[in-house]
Length: 290
Image (tube, rainbow, N blue to C red; front, side, top):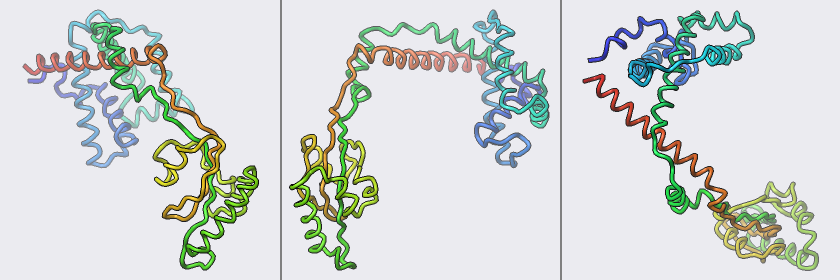
């Protein structure tokens, strides 16, 4: 059976705060704006959160925790700061079945709940150097920045519906551009603006920084074999004929363990806290239901 602390939840004034929170989180609406179905869904959420909060606050871990008035005042002010003035804030509270004093009590419960969970999670074992090293080795991709290449291209499309863009004409046109580039590679941007049939033409054919797998396979393969500053031969894709310029190569970088260590420690500590809190919550809920 559910303990007397959480019976008839809807009759407890502070419950309205959980109902409002559920309505805002699920539907971004105030309680009066919910339709019947939405209200029931928000109520299911509120029942769960209020019940869990009540159980946690009844545990021995909560008995000697004190919430400073300054912390409670700050939480109240943070909510009030979302409104243009105090009157609007109070009107909105009233619309949702709350007043300032009830909200203050609800916030006190919420802060107390958080403090209990912090106390519970403080029991977790410290993250060891070995834990950090194992995580780094197993998740090295998280700490690796892939190689990027800054590129531009010129495109002549193939479109049989237009004489100047049938395959032979397109190939002739791109070959003419390629010849000009062989004589003067520095004209790439100008030739892209003049001849390219890609929207990037307006920006001199700029593709920006790309990683492997971003472009058409034919372009991708060619670009990542090129040297910095090189211009490709004519490349054919399903869109048409391209010429690539590899402007700059930014090599792949792996963050060393020494630099990754603080972030890994933070990740593992947070994971341990959540596991500890989850196990403790399951235990107290089981005891309460027993």
